[in-house]
Image (cartoon, rainbow, N blue to C red):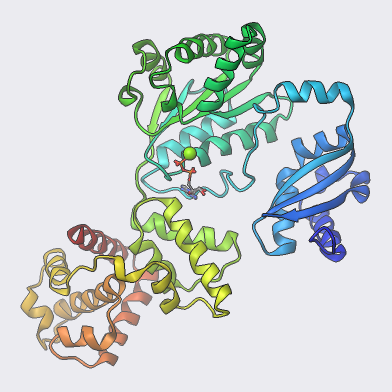
Length: 437
Ligand code: ADP
Ligand code: MG
């Protein structure tokens, strides 16, 4: 198994592609060879440059999906030709760093939407469907780890999938600035301009790095105008709005505002839950609902941190050869370092939202108007503080742990069907978490 992929896995992989993407399959696929599987990258060798290019342009997703299915791991693919045509190689080298090296999983399908990113997602989708004709430029901004790069790459994936002949350049702002400096120093500005102005879609990530780079700003301004006037699409991202990028020329700020500026906010609890579920499913990690809930409620910074928690959890479960349990998840997210809101604070929030008194929550009253808020309060306490059922029972007028367990289960079940209750509980959890900060 020199390549790290067994012969049977490779034939499963090809069979899967025939099944799921029959339209891209070619007879010569039988001559392809997997050469290495290292660091999550499966290298595949084609007989010549034309085949490698075909694979690159049309089959990236098909192969990486099938590779993930065959290996059960997150895998991206790389295609190489056995013997490259020298003329092809020269052209390819010229703009190699501009061609998108996209992460196969950063697609629209894998992007979870919620109130925090709905507009950014919808505008990205609109641009990807009809580049150059809707919002130009599209400018996405938001703080780190909220999905800017994901949406930018999703646009590239979709545009190249729909029309492989379209020239789609995806690059970081630093690449642009360095490229410019290099061309400038070598007196090769003509070639630089020609190269960039060939783009049908120019996507530049983290444009805030143009800050204080005067000459790059000047050059970018001209590139921008030329492309937009020619009806080519520009998509940009930054960690703040155009006006907040320090030392950015006014004329660029106003150009950036001439299309659509969309913000990505921090995801709410419901969106975080959906994201954890999606990421777990993508990596074939089985996580029970209480674990998903725990991760999503404890980690509310950004999506990258959510993914990090899931990765840690998966790694711990593999290293310790244990299934993923609630306890393991608590350790994976470093329970000790997190602030837990006091139960009294939770009672206050529930009492306020559900119109009962704190005294009633702790009383033995059995009227329905009191038992539902009490059950909600027990449920939220368990979810947010992870205290034991016994401990929680103690706070609610010395109740037995089975009472708390029962209350928790009743609410958890009702949340599946009762939308109104679900939104009340979500709001309570959000409020409680806010008071804990
Ligand atoms: P940014 O560029 O804004 O710093 P990224 O796009 O790199 O953030 O996102 C960080 C990680 O979080 C990526 O792995 C990305 O797939 C994931 N991510 C962010 N937002 C979402 C979302 N709404 N749905 C699914 N994954 C997301
Ligand atoms: Mg990014």
